[in-house]
Amino acid sequence: MTTITPSASTSSDLTIGRPRSRRARRVSESLIESVLASCGGFSILTTIAILVVLTTETVRFFGQDEVSVGEFLFTGEWNPLLGETKHFGIWPLIWGTMLVTVIAMLLALPLGFLTAIFLSEYAPRRVRSVLKPVLEILAGVPTVVYGFFALTVITPGLMAIGDFNTYNATSAGLAVGIMCLPIVCSMSEDALQAVPRSLRAGAYALGGTKFDATVKVVFPAALSGVIAASLLAIARAVGETMIVALAAGGLARLWSSPTEQTQTMTAYMVQIFLGDVSNHGVEYFSAYAVAATLFVITLSLTIIGHRVRVRFREVYE
Image (tube, rainbow, N blue to C red; front, side, top):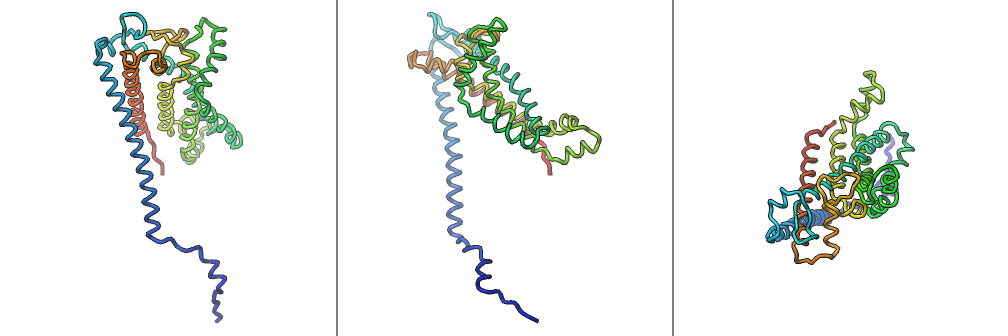
């Protein structure tokens, strides 16, 4: 019987490298944990600082003699800058924000869902690898560019086919919808791709077509991610600033028409912080009360989105 003894060169080839010492490993892991904890703590401190500033300045706003909490929450006239008698009913600004958001979602949600379904279920791999990055480029376009696009392209087109003002909610809403399209499309497509292939195979085995599998199996299974994408897009539209500041106008009116100009909460804050009013007047502090209202709205959307994701979440093995 012949015994084969490995040579020195063979032994050296099998050696991967010197193992790291336990102390060095503990130090590196502790450093990484400290960095991650610092990032998380910084995020929490930033949120707390925002809440403190909004709460403090909002209390100062309601401490003024010209306004009360009841007028702010339960009246429908917003006129803080013109005339001797100022009115601070928040609902015209909320209406303008909701009007632009609804118009944006009427464009972004259906088009985003259909595009996501096409990319996930029907598009060839080569087409998907090209089309999806092109769509995601839209997310990197500055919002001010969308605002000027609304003024120079969308608004003239609307005025050519109907009785639209130069500044109107429809133009701003369509531009916001185009901006939100990559969010809806990308997140929905990722949710559809996460559905196991076995579910599709089961639908085909039962005699279903590709359309049946997509509509009756894949899309319902990805409903949690689709709803999350929708709520994120809605929150993004509610908080949009530059597009509405450029294209929607600056006249806050309750029940304004989509063909007329309107003003959103973010556009009003831009108007105030441009420096045309004193930073000691009630008009200045009203911007913080509007910002606090917007924060409550977006926080509510986030909480609702979390509950919906938990409610409709599907876990596969």
